[in-house]
Amino acid sequence: MSSSSQSQNLDVTLSLSLPPRNDALNPQERGIKLIQLLLSCANHASSGNLHHADTCLRHISELASVTGDSMQRLAARFAAALAARLVKRWPGLYKALNNGGLVGFDVDRARSIFARAFPCLGFAYAVINRTLVQALLGEPIVHVIDLGCGDPKLWVPFVRAMADGPNGPPHLTITSVGITSEAQERLEGRILKKARSLRMDVEFNHVNAKLRDLTLDMLKVNPGEVWALTSILSLHVLLAEDDSVDTHFGISKTNQVSECKRMTEFLEMVRSARPKVVLLFEQESNHNSGRLVDRFVEGLHFYSALFDLIDATFGASSCSNRATLEEMLGREIENIVAREGLEREERHERYAKWGIRFTRSGFRPIQLWYDTMDEARKVVEGYGPRGFNVISEKGSLMISWHDRPIYAISAWGLF
Picture (cartoon, rainbow, N blue to C red):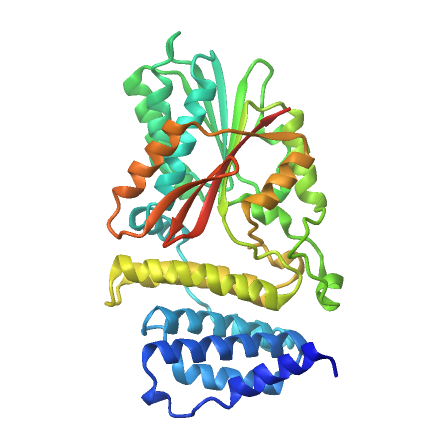
């Protein structure tokens, strides 16, 4: 037996033989025990040892709670994701358990709560607005394509800023891709109302298509337009690929940037239409490893920061907004942990890897201006809980929570 195998077995043994008196544990001890059990369970789930995985889940269920402290709630979400992964071994059972007429989850409401409660999206909007205006102001015909955001809090201020061009307001087209019909109606109404008040010529288009099915013809980028593209927490879905062979043999992609045909084709399609600028806002974490344990550990680090942030914002008391946010994050966690292949779309990658992908496809990083960083910092400081910071990292701007970067924004142009 190899030393690594002995180490792994030792860790499992220690995790399963921790003191059984859970009521005597203080929160710190309970948190440590939960982490040990979760990691052991992830190892067993990855190797197919259902008996030991079930034992771990039984221990976790005694300690975790969706109404407990942040670590207990986080553990409950990851345990549920591991359980879903195990049950998926029996497709009929999994389908029956997930076909009980559950009420649909309101994604738009969850994102709205997220935007109001935390400065992460406000930070992104401030950077995007300033960068787009700097790149496009003064152009007579402007087209901006929005992938997956659809928030009036981003686009109404942008319309207002573009009205102050040196040659007067441009002819502006905004195309929104992949948002719900309700969000589309709300966004269109707000944009056109603002345009009328400014006596500005604005056209709004909605493309009802998934990102993987998007073509240049759908976007209707016309000759003579100066155009830009923004992607807010959306582009990573194109990294989904049928990597079941890699997963089966435990091939890790943690330390390499693997080629992804769909992503490469999309970026090359965008480049071919020669955008003035592309803005990318993504999670600053790596959940795209082929090995379950690798992305499980990354997920624990990333989502523990978000659950801690939720506690700092909402306090210890439970409320519907907190529950909605944690349900949204829980769905992301389940996708990362329980699914593989094309079904696993929450394939977040760090800025450094995105940089390699964009550079390979013919883009270069655009340095974000210092006044952009100052404006983003003011937005972040306007929110309640202290602990946020804005940092500059190799051409990107990142928002961190207690020194842990959680989201990154970057701008890209053509060579």
